[in-house]
Every structure is written in C-alpha cells, then in structure tokens.
Amino acid sequence: MGWTTPKTWAATVLTKEDLNQFLRDNQNFLKTNVAWGTATELTIASGAITKTQSFHKIDTEGDAASDDLDTINGGSEGEVQVIRCVSSARVIRVKNGTGNIEMATDVLLDETGKMLTLIYDGTNWQVLNYPKENIVAYGVVGRSHAGRVKAA
Image (cartoon, rainbow, N blue to C red):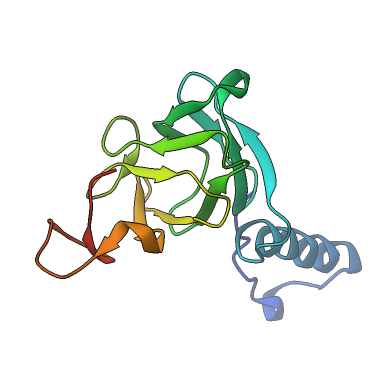
C-alpha cells in the first residue's frame, strides 16, 4: 500500500467512511515506512529478502554460519530500510552490485549492533549510512555517501 494523495475536500462531500479510509491508509503507510518499531526477522532465501517494514533483523538461510544478501524485494521510491544480523553467530554479507543493492563495497553485518541504512531509488537500494566499523580515515579507500569505506 502506498501513500494516498491528500484530497481536495471542497469539491466533494466528505463522508465518514472516506475520511476514515484515507486516514487509516496513510497512518498504516507511516507506521510501515517511517516509524521504526520493533525489528522483525527475515530469512535470506536464494540471496534475497522481501521487506515488510522499515527495520529488519536478517537471518541466514538454514541458520548457516554466513550468507550473502544480494537483493531486497519490495519498496517504493524514497523508502528507507535499516537492517542488522539476527545473531553475531550468523554473518550476513550485504553484496554490492550483485542484485539491487548499490554501495561502495560489500558490508559485513557480523554483530547485532551493526546496522546498515539504505534508501530505495525506484530501482536499487542505495546506501545512506554504513555501520561505523566500515568507515575508515579519509583517503584510505574510494569515496562513498558515508565517507571512506574499507572492503568487507
């Protein structure tokens, strides 16, 4: 469900049902896409997950020790996604350029406190913020939105 464009009420009769639907749909959109709330768990399947809200804990397929995340399905242009691993014992490698995730380099989510923030441009998920462990001194590696990034 996407954002419902506000109506011009002067041209039509405002009904209780119409207003309730309009308010409910937009409230649900904001809850899903803006308010972080509690992170829900998603499990990688063949390198992909499908977002259901804006904050997720990611688990490896079959509880493997590590797994690659290539693609995040779902999303509308401008939506933000924050992800972290579900357990430090199961490492998630978020892959750059393999599916629809675009970053300066791959990113390891190997601690539950490391979070990666992405924004959807309508085609790809672009990095907004790397985990702090991926940011290194200026001039070390290629330029990114978040500064300099070390290879994962």
